[in-house]
Image (cartoon, rainbow, N blue to C red; front, side):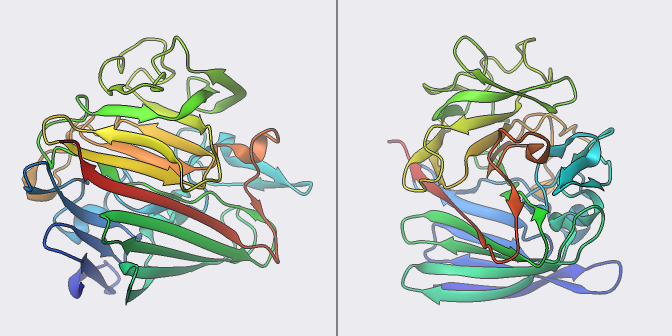
Length: 349
């Protein structure tokens, strides 16, 4: 087990940001930044044993500081959209910052992907990892002080385990998720040839601005039917999708709350790399990098272009505070929010 702590750069206010490199073997390595709890690099082998980096990111800190695509970080206090940035909690109206047209997205300027987390590395029989802690004071439309703890664990089974816990001193809403963009080719090409399987029979219907209508729709007969594995790009341009740019949709998982059951599986046929996701969360948000427009360069000078990465975000449903029929995202004093997601990497031989 190897844990390296390296200085990655300085923020505009002079604070240093460190990178933690976690390694169990020479085959699998994960790099985590204090800024945003960002996973900068995740290296895994293909079917021939060749190791490649399977997440998008930047070579330097400036790339992350100026990033608007949430590459690799934890988003919160509320991941996903909240309509008009407004919600009611216990009879009181709250107004959040609008940063996605008229809507609130991923915590806006107070987002956790922009914050410095306290990081504590650890090694145990279950693997090597880091515990990340953040205290979020009330403000910006979010009531209550929220104390958040996240852990990333790299296991001998080539699993990356993400666990969250959170407590508050006042009733609040939260929806935490990890926003890495996966590309199992190891950096060559887009993700349209990846084959995706999602264990979900329904998805959340949205309007033209990607706000839920409140309806859950069956995937049968739609471009969102991934009940059997299909190439991501096969129906990505279907005009019936709410977002004509591609996938930006929430799937309602069949077995919510069971981290021992697969929620989704991704295969990149050329390399043979696979990714299986298991989670306690009720939904999986599939986002095909629709807004990556080629205007920025990622690691190794590669242009970050349309559909170059695929986000598979385990979470609660967007705009849940405005839809009482959705699973609740309210956390109250005396309660502890807990969540666990396993990203298991392998190969299809």
